[in-house]
Image 1 (spheres, rainbow, N blue to C red):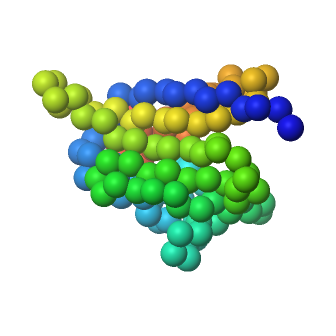
Image 2 (tube, helix red, strand yellow):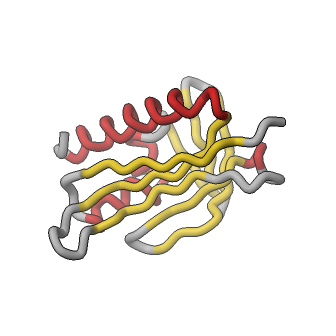
Length: 128
């Protein structure tokens, strides 16, 4: 199996961090922009897209700040994805920081996918 490459992205977003946190940390919030449907049982989240399911384990979360998952089929690997809310101390500008992994030839595709999903999130928040 090929090693995956870590990549990070930043998306400025006009929304309050507390509202944003609801959209990145709850099944109902995630199902509005990240997947068609999201269910959770404790630390296990099930993401559903067009009838296919992917399960992820919640690795960590910090209230109001970030959430981190690992796909269940990748459990023996160090790979994860994290969605973090960052607020600039001076300007109070809010950004969503994405950390994810992809195989080298799939990084651009992964970034494009995140751009589309964050664009959906911005539309829902009226921040587009």
